Length: 228
Image 1 (cartoon, helix red, strand yellow):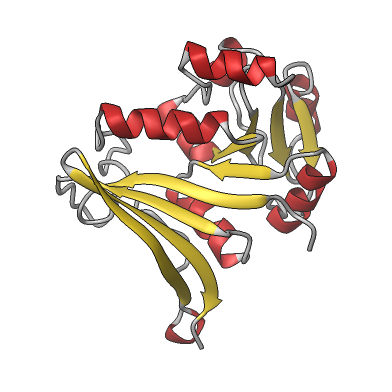
Image 2 (image 1 turned 120 degrees about the vertical axis):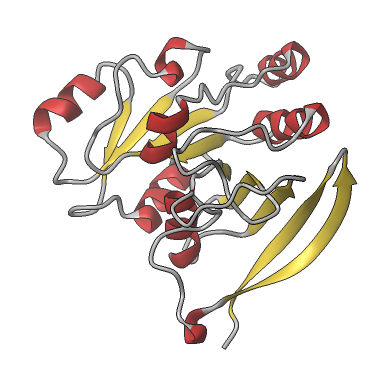
């Protein structure tokens, strides 16, 4: 399949949580990791989140550094990568920060069962891509993004989208910053939620690097595929 190079970047607690049981975002990493993430974003053609993350955190997904924005402009690009929301039912609010902050193309990926009136109103704000019957077909979406010239796609979660991308075999690498705190809670979002793999389906990783950053550790993994 001709798709972009796709990587997930996530900050997780020492016990693998993305946020609290109330889905409240917690500061897991510090300034150095913030700069690393901004650099990754600036070097990507597109950044993707799921609708759960958008509704819980309302991220703008913009490049923050003026220098990195200027470098993108100098290279003939928009200040920000293309911002993509995977939103099967077209629930993205019109006042979301991705629409209010920063220049650049926004894409809302919806399923073919999303309400027509919601799709129509979103088309005033973004490019809407329809794929999949009841849920966005992520593999088909990846192909469409590649056809649009998106060669590098950064996935910023949350747990449901991470799981869906990994279980569809679409992810090439994973960055996890593991912070020095415990969040706990059986209902708190984890790095990969969803249905989970059976023992026969487990996904194998190869450790590319491990680096201490401030009070945490950054792990970079290559996704090798099913272990059995």
